[in-house]
Length: 163
Image 1 (cartoon, one colour):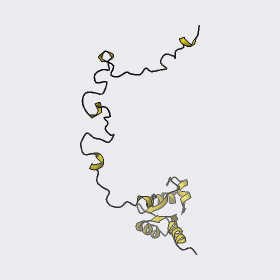
Image 2: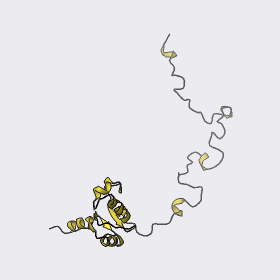
Image 3: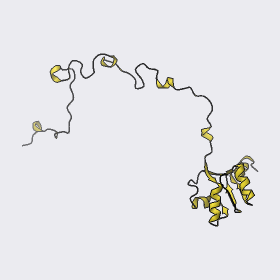
Image 4: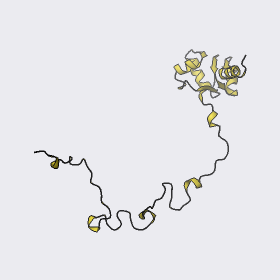
């Protein structure tokens, strides 16, 4: 019969508290699980997490900040080469924009600017719209009879000259 004096929790649902410092017969007497001597065996003893036992701490071994980092304002680019333009020209695409580069999976990110670099050769006349280009890339495209339009510079001029 069930009554209030016979109610017990399910076995394993309650963990018994480990009683420390109640004699050596308990298995947790004498040092009570705190080891032998030292700062942490004392009452109120405590060592911060960053303490390294007296050796020079990591934050003091690191050099102080020097120099200048412009990472906050750095412009990240999708990089394409002149050799990529030649591959597109081989596919009979001569008018190249960001959308066509994304469609042909030459660039992956739509949010980044596009920069054209001069690695490779170009044999076909093309026109391309990019945000930035190296001097060697501009020379190679113009040598093949093509045209480069720098989109980002036009946008900056519009922002700087409110007319």
